[in-house]
Amino acid sequence: MLTLLTYPSAFGLFSASPFCVKSAFMLQQSGQAWQRSDMLDPRKMPHQKLPVLRTPERLVPDSDMIRIWLEQQGADFDKGLTDIQKAQSRTLVRTAEEHLYFNIVLDRWGNDRVWPILRETFFTGIPALIRKPVSGSIRKAVLKGINSQGIGRFSLSERLDRVERDLEAISAYLWQSPFLMGNQPTSADMSVGPMLAAMRATPADTPLTQRIKQDTLLNSYVDRVEEALPLT
Image (tube, rainbow, N blue to C red):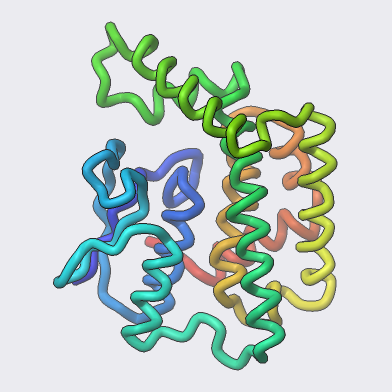
């Protein structure tokens, strides 16, 4: 049986990581027998991050590489799509994973109202006496990385404007059909859906959580993806 090494459930989601949720969706749709195994410290993993898929032969790191492996076993997450639709799907995935994601990270790790909740959720394995200084050091490293990536250099209003343009692009697809590429969920939904769900689930009211919760189209889309791709 395949095993998905994933961050634990948090904030009402299968996992706090949208990439772990994406991988779970793909495993579920692939028809392969699989199970989850939760962990909080991925430093011994191939890329020092999760998700990782344990197969009989090897460890497969990264949600995109997990997708490729599953497709090599016969899975087809974009069945019936044209080449143009597949290209559009790829663009939507990259929009979610290379831009929206980093805004979510900053919304969580850079927000002083959210941070105490994250500390007690993600760092329970660290003794309480040293939890604050150790987690604080990790927080600084994360925020430094976000600054190096570029998102951290924008003001809040600039970030929200950039996110808004992405959400408008996603919404344009959803005015046409219940899912991004039509009437059935495809690979784009398995990435964009979890990303918007993570944005909505941040455990404090922020401009990003409110943006999704107050948008009937996007809010119902997140629910629809979770209903169409149930995870146990």
